[in-house]
Image 1: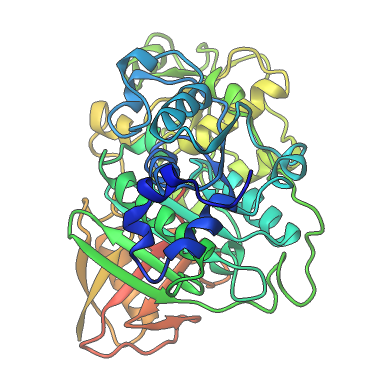
Image 2: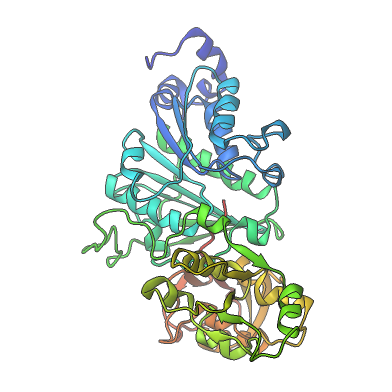
Length: 379
Length: 88
């Protein structure tokens, strides 16, 4: 693609060309840029729309999901007619309609260690708008190891975060949060999210991308930006590169991007079956404990378990199930339990993988149990 | 003395949804213990069995990062409890 701007492009981008920080040279850099967006969801939608509109020459989108009706509250790439269609295909059509002069590449797949190198090699910078904490570490590690700038944004209910990593210029995501807390970091599907929130954070991510590409302004390097929509408050926290960072530190232990321990594909998570608190209460009440073929496995940490738990539950923390393939009862129906339903979801998926037939997950966790069945349960 | 604590969204199910709470203490350790008295279980989400700040949590006192529980907190300094978010 020629980086010269056509007369049509000069007209289309005239408001950029008037900015001395961008101008013709900056617009040509945007045209030459190859940017990959991980996750075509709440964050990816506004980021992709604005970057396509801005004239980023190649926009790649990674997502393996189909458009769901519940996405439409915030994922502004899609409309009602998109329901059931592959996200990246719909997104590509939408972005090409917005700006036919750019190239949009649809990667309808789930990002994992096996495909990240092949995928990243054709791009100059990455925006992470994924909705899984394990993917965030995979993306960060790949960006560090392959020398790609990364803009990372994340949301939860009414709060958002954003930071930027540029190789050799500052700390990475793993310097900020050295280890993940999979299962204790719920995603939007589990806890809800204000629809407009990813609009703010996705647009900030797009802003950072444009600044990096044209070389304007001060990117969020070594700064974590937080946004609280309820309080309408932005904060900024400075953080430094860690000498002991496992991927960008002095003696890195990570030499290649890897899937996190106990990694479950979204497909595996989707196959998990749940049981509501009321259904579980009825099942437990329907027969004496000795006769009821139900095992309750509480996958929270021991301290949490000691604070309060269901009478017949045993405690096997999720980490044990992830790391050692902890032996699980096979002659009972197993119900996995945690605080909010996130850790038990993963435990259930791992148990299915280990061969348990039809394990169940307590939907909404003990918080839902407390609300529906046992208000006095200490948590 | 009392100080203001800004609570990250994933920790707010302990505070009844409150984004900001007040806590008593002259050090981070005292403040977290005070929070745990009123919001049982909250401290454990941030501090592990070895009394270290968990690696997906960062705590700032005003603009200074707290690396240890003994970090002093002045009365007019807000404490910020930050947590890795994963939603997209």
